[in-house]
Image (tube, rainbow, N blue to C red; front, side, top):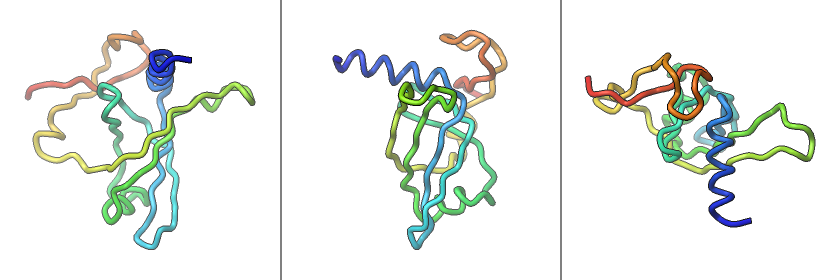
Length: 122
């Protein structure tokens, strides 16, 4: 399978799902995994909203490294595909936080699959 094919599969997985699992660890290294609703920006940024009091948010305050998995949990055994990501997470603040709006309109690729975030200039 070519890199182009794999890239297309990864894009399809990211666009076809609403939840991802974010794995964090506390200061001592104790792991924690959390399913979160996400939006993707150009496959390079994954955004989610969480309470600052959530365990994964508290973990990120001291250890920002994360592992992420996007997958369809309804896939049959042996037929599942997933996108695995390692990243550094950061809380959005100021203009970074203000540049996104939850848009209930049609998604440019998936139509009316649910709300999506759209960049704006407030």
